[in-house]
Length: 283
Image 1 (cartoon, helix red, strand yellow):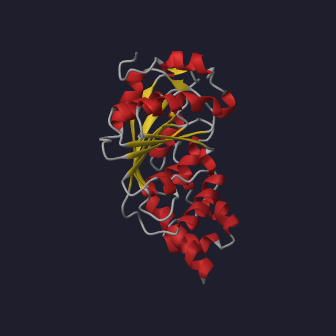
Image 2 (cartoon, helix red, strand yellow):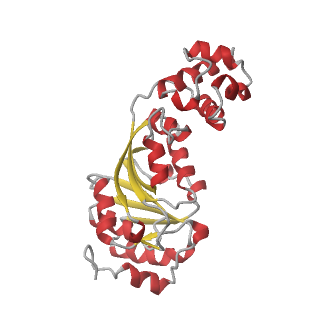
Image 3 (tube, one colour):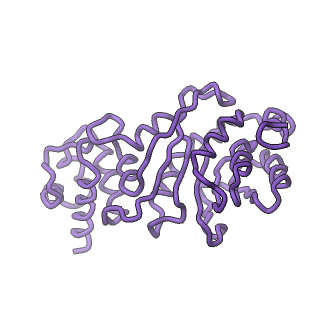
């Protein structure tokens, strides 16, 4: 029996269901239920919330979310070996856990949510975490279907989310995340807490959606940041040539020096560039 419920310890669950973590699936299981409960608590009060969890594995975080009162958890798991283990949790919490065997990259949770508030809480698989995040950050319409995200990433990725202009970590992901959300690194988790232990420290990040981000065409912002940071060592007058519009004109309209580099342009500057591009492309 565990400290949070009457289900077996996670190591016993893994042994019973032969859930050896697969590197190909980016799996690193967090087995300390004190730590999974800390992550769940970081997601705030859960009593009226539907939680979307990606990659639950043996279900440590799933159990913590339910034990702390989540009204409902939608667990999206690609690994068929984990489904039976998760179903045991569903049996312990009737009608509160929906186990969906699916690839999260191709799964849209919105039809499953009902009318209440939703929250994304997950120890994301390392190999798809950033791709999933970009998808949630570029969700339409905005404000999105979730009221916050509490996600675990490699520390390096977490630092990119919160990086400021002029830092080495500042890049396309910084711009997209800070344009539409307010990201905060909450705490770190050491490699030794995972099975198998990864080579890097992990960080839990909270991202709160901005209700009214700076007005901007999302697709244009994605194009501008991709071009700018794709050649981040070059001046913008050179790196933006791939956009098909005279970069000198775009930079002038955005009020940015043509000798500037991407890493020194703030969020508002990229929004102005994206709006200039949109205006030129639609003219």
